[in-house]
Length: 529
Ligand code: HEM
Image (cartoon, rainbow, N blue to C red; front, top):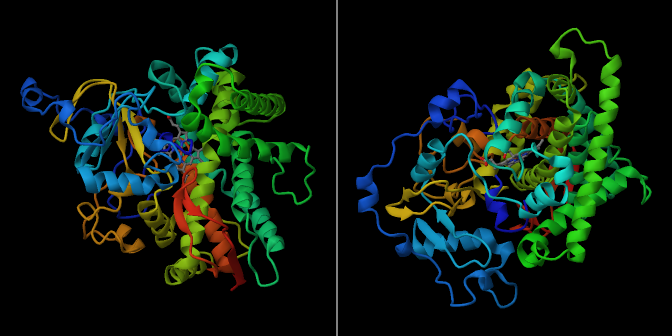
């Protein structure tokens, strides 16, 4: 997702926190979901007849010729993208619970909906192939530039309709099954132990981590995704990487994607028509990832030929997909998709979670106590069952997601006309669910300004399940959410078991730099407990 309006359209319930009231999430083809996502009621002619016209939806008016795009242009524009979380709040304050941002040159209208009941209704009645508009660069790359490689089964990210459904149905079961994720507790723990050693070495004499510690978090998440999607240790956490070593090239490629996709998608859409230098670099960068995944998948295929397999349980995620599909390309494209969206999301989420932990010491102590209770012996390897008992820790993360939603919103393109908040909305409009705002609305959450993880563990109080959905919902729900939860839980369990995190510098503001995360040097202090 870019630092752009696409940030809205990228992106569950992260954890099973016992006794919480969260939206039941769905996977497209489970029985449970079929019953929950089925249309609640079809809209009658009468409802359409009584609806107000689309033209009356309030919102900033487009200026003739310039439309509304100018508002996003730095310097002369009114809305700074890094301030977009504040802009979405301003839309609500100025125009109310439904806002139309029309006249955007070269793209459909955006419709911001701040009503959790309406958001729930829309999610629950979306059909079997929901359309989440996102990443036009990737769409062009997969469907035009490398059509030769992606062909008829281009993956899930930036793919829609039957092609998306066919691909997702091939990979979703192995990726989302808890049995699969359980197998990764030990590998993720090893990566995380390396990361903590890396952090220990990176501290200065008073225990402060370096200014660019967020980059180090990226290296950890790259290392985790390499282990999950490619069955390898990429080596990104080594301390003596030469500039042309493979891990360094992977780090650079991930950084390039992080910094430039947004620029391409929002600031300079000329690449849609001519191959600009930045577009050419983007294509080369993507080719690098395709080549990397293909190479590691071929190696995994070779290993699999000689591996003794007595049951499915002996297989890694990648090996399961290789065995069940028989086509290494499916595994390659799956890995590529997981890498493309599974680095920045988790890295930014972890920046936010660690910063909140370091600045909310009372709550951090409660997490540490819980972790000590569940894991009395720090040298004992973690188990899935242990992690499952970290109820308060999971609720802490959930509360960070509510107040500071890493992915600031999700979205869907209407595939048929609808009536939303009493207005007739034509198909084709891109509806935005601004989670960053709805998760903080008094109407849906009791005392939303209060950071209180306990709310996720209690049954009383207002907490609308659809006001804060960090991983989306329904058939297109985040494919990597169980891995994301696992990685976050392992990191907190290992880190807070041994260290107290503090923060002694200028308070950080949040901004939409790429995702929504603390903006500035993340100089956390690690103090041995
Ligand atoms: C805390 C970290 C993460 C957050 C907040 C997050 C959030 C999201 C959201 C909101 C969506 C859109 C869901 C929808 O449209 O309803 C999504 C999609 C997706 N996510 Fe994540 N995600 C995270 C981590 C990951 C990781 C680690 C991976 C890979 C291992 C991943 C893989 C994906 C994929 C492949 C999709 C596209 C699914 C589809 O369109 O079928 N995500 N994510």
